[in-house]
Length: 162
Image 1: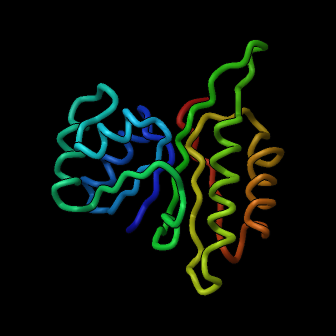
Image 2 (image 1 turned 90 degrees about the vertical axis):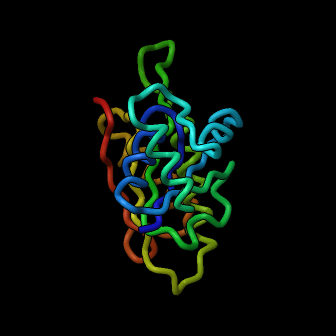
């Protein structure tokens, strides 16, 4: 399966390593040039036992690709996993700006995919507050994609922490 991972921090890098271990092809996306450089070299940008070894094996097998932005990565993807940060705000809530930005970028890429492309599964793995999917994420994705979930994409929420 071809899987795109948006965000190569602790969660994204670890998921990438595990998916590579299982034989999947992974395209990792992150704006941070240091994380991209580490991942391109088969090194983990985070400290987690076994992750570097799995990344190195996936890279050697030709199943790991690292890019800066979504671009055309969705044209061959089956699944997208969003693992970007949601840091705390001054008021104690979560800053969803990174998730919204990635969601809008993914929506635009979905809109640009050929109509004949198979539907893609979008999995939000970032930490969100209750209601954020329905109130913020799905509307942003729907607007950017030009269509609601259903024919061109599906969306799921699988939080890392709550």
